Image 1: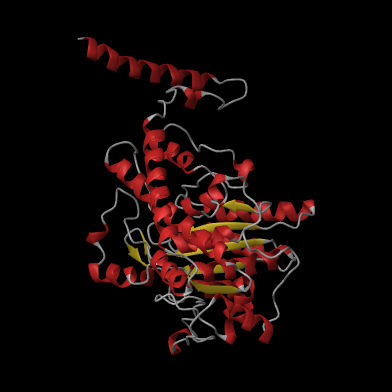
Image 2: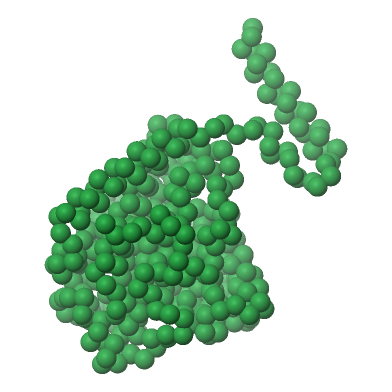
Length: 414
């Protein structure tokens, strides 16, 4: 069974190139090597040709066929040496992440979690990009990057404490270089930029990656981060998961141009990648992170994908989008796509898929048990550590809250 990235401390991603291996020379050697994973040559449609408004970097078609295109040889070179074992690892991480996500959704419906933000449909964007990071890189997520957390070695059950209301984030950000989930839309882009500027002053050769959604791209914080990153040549990659909907607001009502083109106005490159293609997401993110480490500044990646479920469990997507839209995207399912490739290239057999299914069941059982065993939080902990030496106003608020809590006990005793 392929080793899980969640079962160990984060390390250099499987199959990643050493720092300094730039892969920027696209040519016959790398282009030929990219096809060695076994497969059928396909051609881009006119709608995806380089330079067009809807350019889309794709290395695996929805049918699981390998794309070989000289225009994207530079990106393909970053996964040219990927092994069958590493491809199975990508698939395994996506499957287990989806199972964890489904279990969390079910737990919320059962009243065990207050809320949950599902990543269903976005597994390739998150696992592909997460696998591209190095141990010394730093990640700034939103509240939906469960797959990236998995790649960084964060125990998935730690993600659930905040949604259950027992903590403000169940992990130490510095242990995995994975920041706490950010609820404020878009603010993490500025945090990431500031951190990237700081590590530059420290002389580090690591990079920073900030995740946000298409809705957050309309926030002022994101534009400010773009500008600061460009002006100060910060080693930061902005990874936008364009899942087509900012809650109930469609992408067409948010922007008049493809999101990746916004980078041009700030003076750094932007790339649109097929967000349901794990191989392409891995390749493009490696490219962006390595150029950042070389001191070439920021880049914007727009992972063009789809949110298959609700924005959160408090949302009803049937009120604003049609079933046929979801059906069209289901045909591009990221997990099914990679499975088709693994099968056609003889990189995985039924034994592998069977073992993975059993492991998935084990993970689901563990998640349920851990969540239900979480202790209730100290109701008064929120008043601690607000001020180093205490404060009269906080003391007053604590007393008011204590009286409020006591009123319930009095009512029960009547």
